Length: 230
Image 1 (cartoon, helix red, strand yellow):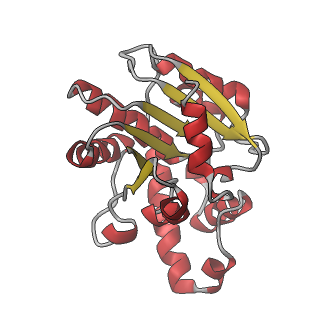
Image 2: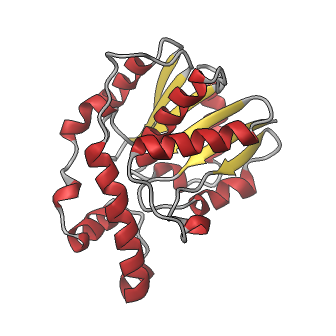
């Protein structure tokens, strides 16, 4: 059985992978990872940088991995997955693959909307427009304020993160995936993740929006099929 370590998007917690845990079948062990200040780690201070989040994720993976494993990061999680992979590679711990989803590679970040310049209310409205913000959040002021603060903190990490492929590269297989209707991550941009590794690379486009991977409870099976041809 292979382990699939899963990193959430900005503002999200490991809870977003609950359906995957229920439906992954016998080939995958789904291991959701949690960021400081999110979900089960709500009492901790939020990370101040993608690099810090990556080091934390790498430490958790190194401690928990039991054999073959894959790292999956969605949206902001793809940047954390990249950083974690760099840290693990330095320790001679090699994932079977790194899967980056729904986020342009770092050197194309200039194309992203300048979310860090939005107010918290504007940011929440923008995130809601992407399709993964429950109406109940907006109806509950206390919950809204908590999520808005977490989201705002996460977006600041985006603003500060700087990396390109001109330095050291991974030697780990990488797969980039995106949603066909996701206006923020066109397929041609996702192809440029290939420059971050000297290992095998593949890219796949699925039906759906920015959160395509969470609209299908059986998505781990699709990932497994794609990994077989990587």
